Image 1 (cartoon, one colour):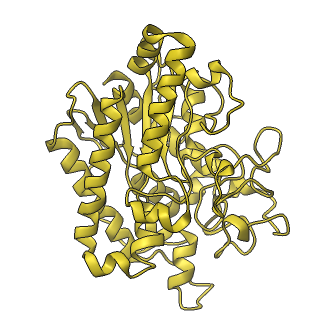
Image 2 (cartoon, rainbow, N blue to C red):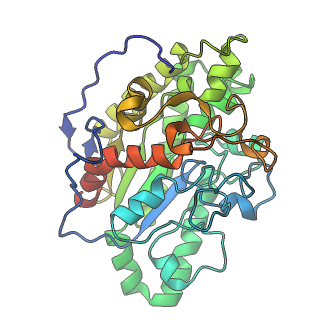
Length: 368
């Protein structure tokens, strides 16, 4: 089990205006289901990277895909969908918890019915980031283009159901934005381009400015209830541990420096969201802490039924993801014992545990 040593205690109980700091992770068996509310949710929309992409990359010319086995082996129907997971991802659990639908489909699937479209879709693209260069390097959908797709979506829906119903959907919909990890891992810490321009702190500021521009655009298009997911403990991703382990395959520990980057970025993001009002002012943005629940799964896996936290279920679990995790890869017999499915992405079980912890945050977004 990977540990980087002592962590500073996290202030997880303080609620701020329009900001929610995630409550500690607890067992789903004892967790108070805080989603019981009189406020109905019309739709769930997601934007960002592979943590939300449910298959948009299937429809674009990129090598960043997962629409082949063993991906999707535990998904309903046991078929790969383009999700970087063995089964459902976080957005699917959110939509199901809210009673909206069982899965959030990719917008670029042109076979979607009007009902599927009106109850929410995913605009995310695996491999992307807030930095436009990140998307360019992986030939995936930039955040700005995701916003353009959302604009196109709104026109399609208004044509199909009328402006009044479209506006009602937007008023009661929740929006989830999850990106930033690729910017640090596959861009800043892998290639020299941005390191020549920015220090780590400056790059974080650059990313948050791009995020803010994205939020402004989302609000201008009618988004009212928006959740911004923090960075995870980047230093605990199996591929990051492998690259930094210097061949020590039996002593796998989280990379302290990368986790520090995550914490610094998250702290500044939270402060900026607290102090900087978004325009138009009627849009509400909530900070959602992903770091804390993942840290707890890593530090106390047995409490949540997990046995392995430093390698993925697919192949050796050290570096496999995307095309390296393929039909010829040997996979673990029970992915529910693993935190990670491949060398980067959580298993369906891990997503379910994380969404259990996010219920207070989701409730806060709904009531905003």
